[in-house]
Amino acid sequence: QMQLVESGGGLVEPGGSLRLSCTASSRIASSDYRAWYRQAPGKERELVATIAPSGDTTYADFAKGRFHISRDFRKNAVYLQMNNLTADDAAVYYCKAPRLGIWGQGTQVTVSS
Image (cartoon, rainbow, N blue to C red; front, side, top):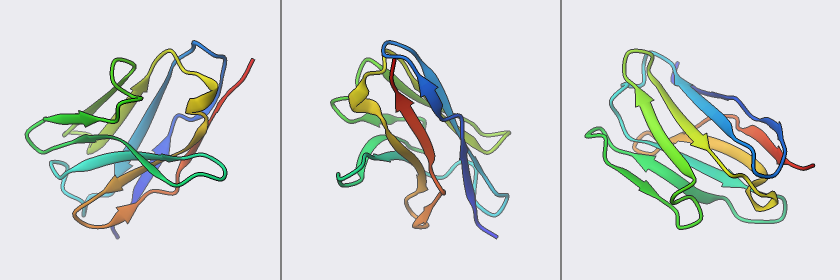
């Protein structure tokens, strides 16, 4: 079974940090492309960051300088470190294996004091 499972979401105060994790089942190659998306209520899902098999990364403008995507090949996992969070970052965050078209179930991030 091909599956992605996100974790690490939760409630954080403005200015705080969270680290999201996305773990893939063994049938998904650990070296394949991965991406993080997010979707806030009433808004379209938007791309946050990507990481290529080479390790090259891309970021949405809102994520540059605050978010960092990384991966652990041995654990078949991808991470999203998010710093200096604001209310605008509140959303459900999804992991995706783009070439396979597989999405995780999402993890909720709430930013509130």
